[in-house]
Length: 201
Image (cartoon, rainbow, N blue to C red; front, side, top):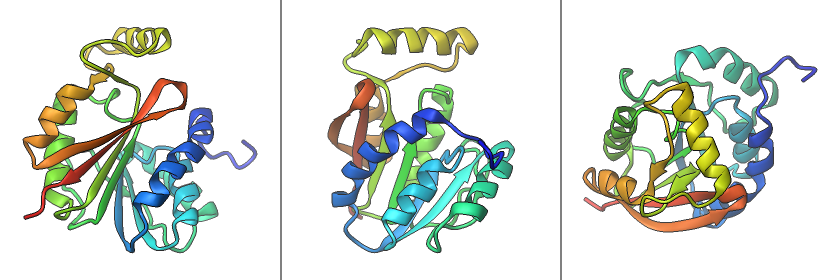
């Protein structure tokens, strides 16, 4: 890119269908915590389209330079400066948040990282608030496409701790932290948007 900012083609492709799914489910004013904002492409695009949402992007410290650069150049007024968050080791931003959102993170975290994410979401998400988790997932232990199988094999070849997660395993894990799976929305390219909700307290 001419700006020199980090750029992920997949983020550009999937941002519209994700936003189309989020919009009717975010028809209220509130604070949103994004876990693993990466290049910031989703954050700037979605925050601009959802001006009533106060968007708080986070990522691991090594990603903050590029993420912060994009937000400084392209970010709308309701998009905050990024905060460092390694879900396993960093303090989480102070909640409660009305929404938590994360895209393409569960398969690149170790399972211990996913467990840490579930615990953190359970702590910072207000009662009744949604948690949106986007990515490729297995269903009942099975791949949903040949492409997902190949992607999983590639991930595990790079790092055995990575890999596609099973929807049922995620459902069980998050339920342990009072965050319950409510919807499983099919998305393009054999991805899914999992919609969880924090139990009312």
